[in-house]
Image 1 (tube, rainbow, N blue to C red):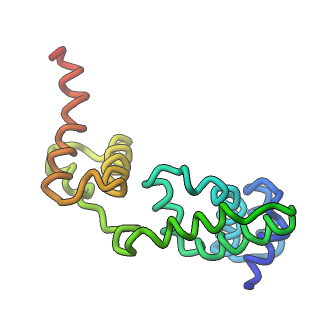
Image 2: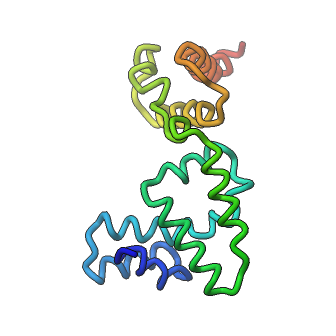
Length: 164
């Protein structure tokens, strides 16, 4: 196991912010401290992986340290004297998703929102996240479908504000 994963095992009971702080005090790089915090923050997510909504689960397994997370979770379960069934279930669920569906390129981008006449702002991220979640949930499967859904989302507040 690498240093970050070993450190995450030692700090698995700490709040993620505390784990990141300790990582920085130990002179970890920013990337190592971020990875440490992510592992500690998400170790218990594996326990609930079977019931996470599909977009949330796909975002979790898309992380480059997900395999490390599974290893950390298994070690924590063994150390706590707990069953590792949730870990096995998370692996099975991950393996059931085709690799090209885990983190596909977004069907729409901020450029599409600009083309629709929207100015960059806080709404951008919310709209793009909502559309990407629908894509990860397999409710949007092609660009035309995503563009139409984007128009619906963007126009809904405008209709409401004009009293229609």
